[in-house]
Image (cartoon, rainbow, N blue to C red):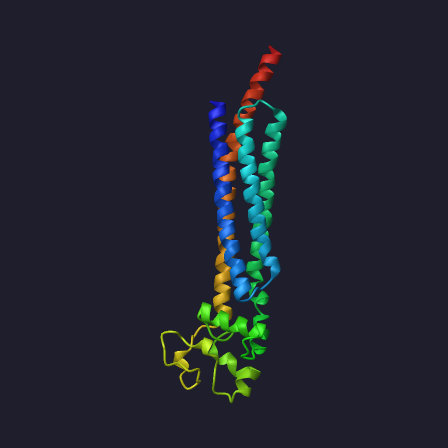
Length: 241
């Protein structure tokens, strides 16, 4: 009875570890792709995803160790198993705290985006210009807050004050040529708003994922510890008799 229940609990830990690892990898790839193509608010925002991978690794190791422990009656191995689950809890708490911090500071971390737009030159060899055009085309946005932000850029003034980058053109309007006389042909939402929604989605997903991990730990850890104590208690009773 003990061995079969402990084995099932260990398999649950392994399953959760694989799910957390795959979800963390997916979120990390989305973040890296957006950072490489668009704009990375802060390299420290990658920390929650690293902690996600670490949590997945410890869950998998703990699951495999639990499967092995279920066939042994070793106090040391059982203690190591519980210790690994405690490490998982600490890693998850750290990742949740970092995620919450970045959620609160997301607006300020996106403030440098304004400087990227101000440095726009329209030259395809310029890094800031490529970033702005890629961001506006892929995220379907225009300007920082909206398309009117372009009026304060040196590129707009230098080009006569009547043309916006073609990357601002809404793709449904094939006749859009960037002229300010057709403002309804531009994307109406600013890029900062779109990026905030995107990064907020990634951070919220990490938060909910660790909420599920904590719930699983609470559900499985207590009965697992109680099950592992049963053989030890039985040995103690035999010794006393």
